[in-house]
Image (cartoon, rainbow, N blue to C red; front, side):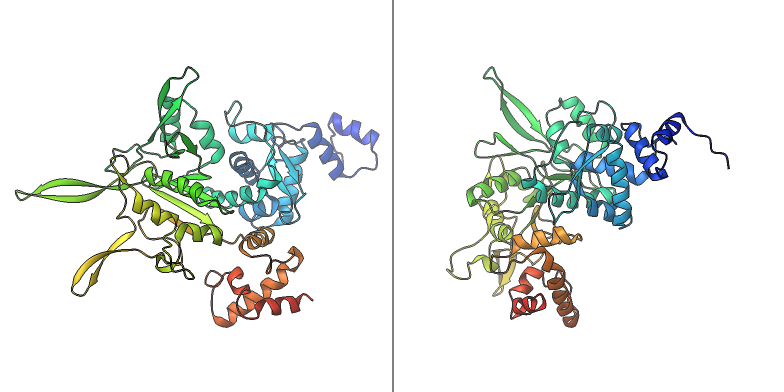
Length: 443
C-alpha cells in the first residue's frame, strides 16, 4: 500500500528509521506545540471536546489532578486521562508535576493552554505555578468548582473574582449581566453590591461598589475574596468557602461579620391594610444571598458551636462564630440580624423566641449562612489527605494503609445499614476498638 508522506515524516524517517508511529506522532506534537496544536491532521493528535473542557476548567480554576480530570471529563478512565494529558503536555498546553504521592499527577495550563481556552488577549491569561503548600486547598476548591461547572451553573473562580473586581463598572457590569447576575433593589431578587472605600495614592478616598469580593474588618476597608461565587437561578450570588485549618476566633469572626453584613437582613416597614397600619418585618437583600462554608471538623465546631449552644465540658456558652455574629448584628447599617437564627416556640400556653440549634448537616433551610462538612472526595489520595486533617496524631495513618482501613469501615457500615455520611470515617475510627481492628488488618 502506498502512503503519501509529509516532508517532516520523510526527514524523521531518514534520521530514525526504526521509530514507531507513536514516536513519529510525539515528535510531530513537539514540533507543532502551541495554540493551534491538535487542530489538524499531521499534528500528531487531534483535540477533542473533553480536552477543550479540561483546558477551560484548569485555566479558570488553576489546577486539577489527573485522577480528578478522569472522573469529570473522561468517563472515569484514568488511563484515557493520562494519555490525553500526555498529549497536551507535549503540545505545550499543560504543565504537570508528580511530587505529591497522595495527589498523583497534578496539571495546570501553560500560557498557550489558557489562550486556547479563554481566547487570545483574555485578561485572565498569566503565568502561575501552584505552590505545594496550597495544593490540597486548591484541589478541594476545584472539587467544589467542578460540581457547579459540570451542572451548568455559572460559577466564578477566585482568579476571576480578583481580576474583574478591578475592572471599571461598565465592563464589570456587562460581564456579570452576561452570566445571569441581576442587580437588585433590596426587596426583589437580585444583588445590591457592598460599598467599599479605597484610598488613592493622592490620599483621596474613592467610593467603589463590590459585587463578588466582600468588605471585612472593623472599618470594612479590607476585602475577602471567596474561593468561589455561584449564581443562583434567581440571579443572586452564593459565596463558597473551603476552610481546612482552624483560624484564631477574632480573625474568623471578622470574616463571618463581613459576610453577615453583605448578606440579607430584616427591616421593619409599616403597611396599611383595610385602613389599619401595621409594622411587619421584611427581608432586605444585599450582596450575597447565601454563604456556604465547607470545613473540617475543628473549623465547623468553631463556626457552629456546640449542641444546645453550651460547651459539653465547661458548661459555658458556645454559640459558635456564625450565631454569635448574627446575634450581635443590629445597626442602622447592617439592619437587624439578631432574629436570623432564632425561632418562636410554644411554651406553657405561650410563646417565646429561642436560639435555633444546628442540624447535623450544618444547614438551616432559607438561612443565609451554613457550615457543611467537607465532602469526602472520590479520589483516594485526596480522601486520605482530608482524613488526616480530621484526626489527631493518635489516629493518623500512612497513605499505604488507607485502602485496607477504609474496607473495614465500609464493611461495618454495610452490616449496620448505614451510609458513609451517617458515620464519617474519622468519627468511626475513634469509636470502640475500631483503631485496634484496623491496625491488626495492616500488621
